[in-house]
Image (cartoon, rainbow, N blue to C red):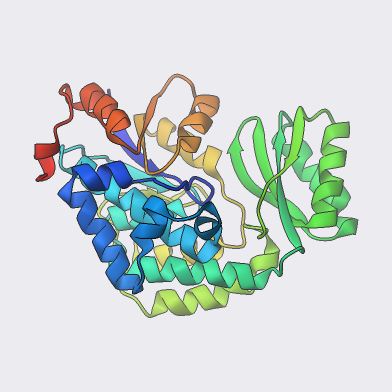
Length: 321
């Protein structure tokens, strides 16, 4: 194994019960969820561990829930002295990465992403915005399909996830028209996603000044390790770069494939997806199947990663209970 990077999932990776096994087994994870409840003034952990799917799907609940679960998993990994040389996160996951490198305090970031979720939901009324995943069509053709459908309304590429997967976002009639055009161009599939907000497109432009105001009110420290920014697949370090990246990220496309290719080109060949689900692990296998990638979200996945990277089995006592 060579250089290690930790990567963090975004919204859509959540599920009821995520992180519960970690919290039961590790004091470090329990502390994260306890702090989350305290800084939000609500029992977020109860919603995460045993709430309803409908509650967890509310954007202003989903976003802090995913970040809290990812940070809890990160704290467990730190107990095994697994030290990455860079981090990155998909959309919301960028906040988890920035907590991981010490740029954002967890207690500041959680209320911030809760507000981020609320602002995003308010910017696009229900029934207006949508998203769709285009499979098996080259990036330039997806861009062209969006341009051809723009007469029906706003529609733009939102996530460049992998060579065969681009997610588009915008107003529902334009998204549906772009899907039709993409299919006619030879797309293998064009599937509408079950979301109520059109993420990462200009319909969320009004959220930028709101986020900028919130970011200006909290301390942002220089990154202790490089973080690859969604907006341009470049490394960000300084507080000004971090604030700018998080502000622009909400209404601009996520260059995830480019971000992973940047890390691979810089010698990273070992990737650990830290947090709920395995969506990023699946994308990495499409981006570059030759690198080593595995997720950590529960005891089974933790033991596999610790065994592979540390040469030993996971032990609860390593992080104090």
